[in-house]
Length: 585
Ligand code: HEM
Image: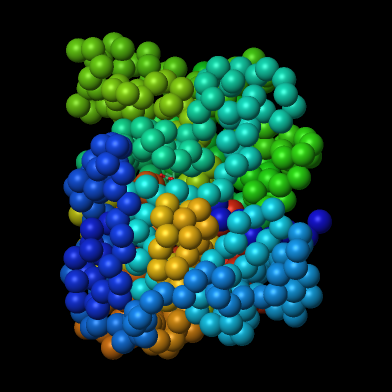
C-alpha cells in the first residue's frame, strides 16, 4: 500500500505576537475576516492569552528584517471562484490519484518533491482532489499563510489525528472495553480535539507550559540528561575512529524521551544508561523498563504515522490501528501489563507528594512540578492531565530528536559554522558544572543556527487549517469547510523570500543581514496564534542544553551519503546519521 502524507500537528508549524509586531512594516495584502464567534466567549479570551504568552523564544529585535516583502501582494478586483483554482486533473471517485501516482516526482517518502513539481506546473496556489476528501488547497505564498492564520485565529480547526481520537474516544480498535475508556471519557485531548473541547484544555495548560519560570525549573535535569548523552556518545562510538553506529538515530530518540520525561513525567527514565546498567528508572516503583518504554514510544509514533496516512482502519481493524492501540495502552492502562503504565504512575506519585505539600484546596504549591501544577488546575480533571501528558509524549519525541539530528548534520557539513558556534559557547558559557537560564539567552549566533536549520531542514511538514468561513486566498474565494495546507518546504525554500535559499546561512537570522527573510509568515517553525506549538519552550531548552554540552565537548563530522528529509509524523532523516565525534581539547 502506498502512503501519502498527512498533516499531524507537529508536522504542522512559530511565534505569537512577535510576528504581529514584526509584520507591521509588511504590506497587508488583504483584510481577512476574523472568525470571532459571538456566542463563544471562551474564544475571545484566546486572543488575550496569546498576547500574554507571546513567544519569547525568538526576540523580535534579533529576528526579522524590517524590509517590506516585495511579493505579488493582493489581487485587485473580485476574487475568482474556487472552481477556477488550478491543479492536477481530477477524475470522478479517484480524484487526482492517477495523476499523482504516475507523476515522475511522486515519492511517498518525499511528497514535497511532488508538491514542488505541481507548483511549478500550476502556480503558487493549487487544488488537489483526493478520494473521499473535500478539496485540499495548497498555498505557497507567505501573504496567503498570513491570511489563513489570521482568518482562523479564533477557531483554529486543525484536521488530522482521527485515529488517535478513535482509539481514545471509541473504546479502541478491537471494540473491547479497556481501562482507558473511563480515563478518556470520550474526550480525545488537544492534539485531536477541535473547537470548545480543544480550547477547554488548551486554555488551562497554556500558561504552565509556556511559563519561563516553570520550564526553567527543569533546566538542571535537562542539563544532566545532555551531559549523560555526551557520556553515551563516548560509550557507543568506535573507540578508534570516533564514528557512532547506525543506531545513532535511536540514541537521539532516547535522549529526547529522557529529556522530555524530566518535565512531562517528572522523573528520569533511565533511557541513557549503558546497557549493563539498564533497570527501572529512578524512583519508578517498578514501572516499565526504559527499553520497553522506548519500544512503546516508537511503536506509538510509527503506528500513528501509518494510521494517519492509510485510513483503512475506518472500515475494519487494521494491523496499524491495533498496534496504535497496544502502544497507547502501555502508557495508560494499569491492568493490561504487569508493570503499571509510566504516565499513570507518574501522576500517582505526584498526587501523593502534592497532597502532603498543598496547603489549600485546588492550589498547587508555588514550587510545584508541571504535573502538580496541572493536577491542581481548576477545570482540568486527572484524566485530562493524563491525556495531555500522552499528547506531549506523542509530539515531543521525534520533533526534537529530528531537529537535533538535522542540526548536527548541517554543522558537520559546515565546519566554519560549527567552529563559530563552539567559539560562542566557549566564550559565553564555557563548561560550567550547571547551566543557568541566562546561559541559554546569550547565544545569538547559535540561535540563528538553530533557526536556519529549521528553515533548511524543517521538522514540521506543513500548517493545516479547515476554513471556518469563505476566505480569499491567492485571489480565489475558497469556501468554508475546505482544508488549506501551507507546506513548509515550499515556503522555506522560496528564493524571493529567503535569498540564497538553498544555502545554509545562519547569518540571515542576525539583524541587518542582506539575506534576512522578506516576510514574517514564511518561516513559522512552531506556527502562529492560539494553536501554535505548546511545547516550544520545552523544545528550546532541551535543544540548547544538548547543543551547549555536545558542541562544548566535541567536534562533529559526517562523511557518508547526503541526508535528505523523509516524511513521517514529522520530517526525519533519510538514512542513519553516522557522525564521527572527536573530543575537543
Ligand atoms: C523542534 C521542535 C518542535 C517543533 C518544530 C514543533 C512544531 C509544532 C507545530 C508546527 C505544531 C502545530 C501548530 C499548529 O497547528 O498551528 C505543534 C503543535 C504541538 N506541539 Fe510542537 N513542535 C516541537 C516540539 C514539541 C515538543 C517538545 C512538545 C512537547 C513537549 C510539543 C508539543 C506540541 C503539542 C501538544 C501540539 C498541539 C497543540 C494544539 O493542538 O493545541 N512540540 N508543534
